[in-house]
Image 1: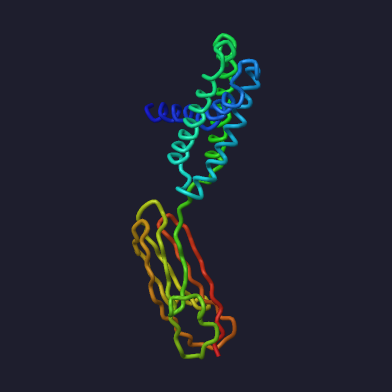
Image 2: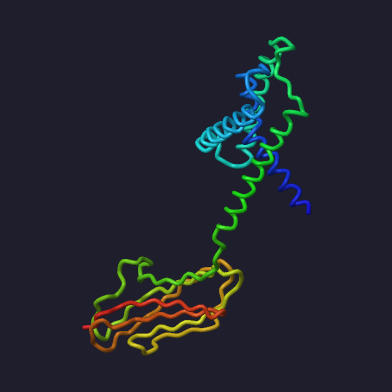
Length: 243
């Protein structure tokens, strides 16, 4: 409940600060007389100018201190304070009868309606962004390297009666510990197998494998299959000419 209240408060304050307050201060700075603008015109001007200031300030933060909610909020608060003080100074230079005044029975409905509409729009955008954000996926990395821990020198042409070394790599990106079983086959004949290999979350293992090539033939298939405890299966193929 407390988190919901804080989120709602943050939404209201952020919306007012990013989309209304600085623009309203600028509108008073530029048009401090009550006859200069109608209430609806002033509200629309405040929203448009605030958006321009927010976008500009976001770019400035991005290339200087970094763009985060905290840095953007503090900088927008600083801009709002500067504009409000400047507007107040100019507003006080006008005759009392000519100064802009907010008549709550007449003007408040425009201001409150504008802020409420902005809050609704921001909330809808936030909900849409969250709902369209892809959910995090969990998986296992399964890869093969050559004997130099690279992907350049896979055995592709070998002599009969020789062996080649491959490095089988597994990384657990699941939600917790995972158990793996795997086989390595050459032309459907198993040359290596393992099971009950347990890796913790985020743990990586690289295991060297020696594959003997005993029979000549073109395009012999080296098949590597990995299965985890949730029955997810991963498969890799290499093709080797044995002469």
